Structures are given as structure tokens and as C-alpha cells.
Length: 339
Ligand code: ADP
Ligand code: MG
Image (cartoon, rainbow, N blue to C red; front, side, top):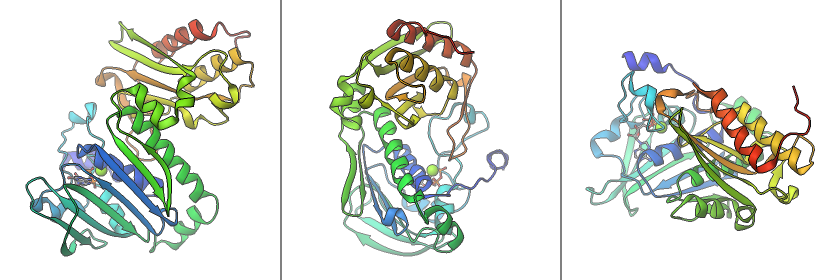
């Protein structure tokens, strides 16, 4: 009960993007090496996420879609050093209340896979065998069918296309964080994006972003002795093609802290400043890059609101200074230091 109170109850499912994010994170938590995401009608008609993870045990099935059920047991202390993504036990329950959900799952011990129909309260309504292998496939149909205003508000116009882009960006960064993971994203009949299984970050960037982009990046790796951390950054080579290597938004300026994609505006700002200064482009351009900061988990506080990826770093100033020094070596000093 203590844990439940700590967790509070947020609105987890607010868009197709948030559904995909929650389900993909469940798949990661299940230790999968392959995920296939299929959307129909921008995900409003159907969202299907198929993984080859450990599956759900038969005895857990009645509870998985119940509010506050989680198999990822946590204590108040564990919340400091979250190793898994889940722990709120809200995603599946919330999803069931705003769409028609089926869960197909098989563990290594089960002889066959079963597909379960789940009702809006998270109760299992029916069960039938299927031919799928070990792993879990969650399907959500008719998202927001019972919330026509939300459906209209989010998906009346451009928003559904933006969400598809955001999903691709999320998968790109997750795919780079996990080189071994195979991921594909399909919309209607199109393959939107995919990443193959690779053995290292280098291969993962080539597959997730393209060989062409990778060829323009240099890698710098350095440890931060005092903070017991390190920074590994793939950033555009000085003199790289600005058209190819920068964007007017930060959607490919990938910043990761301890395996989690995060938004840290102080770091985005220095990346932009040094890149733009060196390349003589206007300061609205963000470089395409991948910056992975590793820090002791006790010094990182991830805001677990599912739609934000805010993070508080105990040593933010030191990390920023460290990154600045790295960028200074590569791109040279800033011409006119802004206040
Ligand atoms: P949480 O991830 O916070 O535990 P969710 O509502 O997202 O809560 O999922 C509830 C539970 O359902 C999980 O704790 C897990 O036991 C099970 N589950 C969900 N998705 C998967 C999956 N893809 N593979 C295996 N188990 C899953
Ligand atoms: Mg979850």
C-alpha cells in the first residue's frame, strides 16, 4: 500500500505514442530480443506489439491488466535505482479502459500460446489457443472509442502524423541503447522503420540512423573520475554536411542517461551552441548525435511521468562542463560567448 501511494495515479495512456512507449517498455522488461510494432490507421484502429520475451505465467494472467498489478516488485528504496521501466502497474489497466485489448502469450514452459480477451475492467473474458511462439503480443483496437473528444482532439489533424514520427524517434533511441535488439515499425502496409540486431553501438547507429549519417560522426569516450561516471558521444565531425547532420528540432539530438532517453535542455543547448558555432549555421539547428551519460543511479532522479522524460542530475553543472570541454576540443571555442 505504501508503494501504491508513492506511485500515485497518472494518466498513462494519452496518445498512440504513449501506448507504444508503455508496451515496448514492457517488452524490454520481459527480456526480449525482437519487437515488431504494427499500427493501423495511425494506431487508432489497431496497435499491435509482438515480442519474443519471457511471456506471462498462466497464474499471473488474471491480474496483469488490473490496476496497480505489477510483477516488477518494488520497495520505496528500489524506486531510487530503477532497473526496469515498469513498476506502476497502470499501463495495461489504463489501456483496457480506453480500447479493446487482447493479450497473446506463451512462456517457455507452456505448450501452446493462448490469446486472452480482456474487458474494460481488466478481467479476462475469453481464451483460445494460438500458434504463436514464446513471447507476448498485445493488441489494442479502437483506441479512445469511448472518449470521442480525446480522439478528435488528438487525431483530428496533424497530431496523428506527428505521433508516428515521435514513435519512430523513440524506437531509434531505444534501438541504439540496445544494439542486440531487433525492432520494426509498420504502419498499414508500409515498413516505416526497422533496425537489425547488431553487436555494438556503432552498428546500432548505422542500422537505426543510416550508414550515411554514421559515416559523418566521430566517437569520443571519456570517464568523469570525480562523478564516477562517463560520457560516450557520437557527434558530427567538424565540417560535416549541415544539411545532412542537423535538424531544426532536437528530435535526433539523442541524449541518454543510464539507458534512458531523456530531455536535458542544458545539454541540448551546449550541443547546439558548439555545433552551430563551428559550422556557421544559425543557432536554431540541432546536431544529429547520440550522447550517452553514465552516472551512479543514486545521483540520477528520473521523473517517471510517462509522457515526459525529465531527469534531475545531482551533478548537472559538472556534466555540462564536462560535455562543453569535450565539444570545445572538437569544434573549437565559441566566437562570442552568449550570456
Ligand atoms: P508494469 O509494467 O508497471 O508492471 P503494466 O500494466 O505495464 O505494469 O504491466 C502489468 C504486468 O503485465 C507486468 O508487470 C508484467 O508482469 C506483465 N506484462 C505486460 N506486458 C508484458 C510483456 N510484453 N511480456 C511479459 N509480461 C508482460
Ligand atoms: Mg509497464
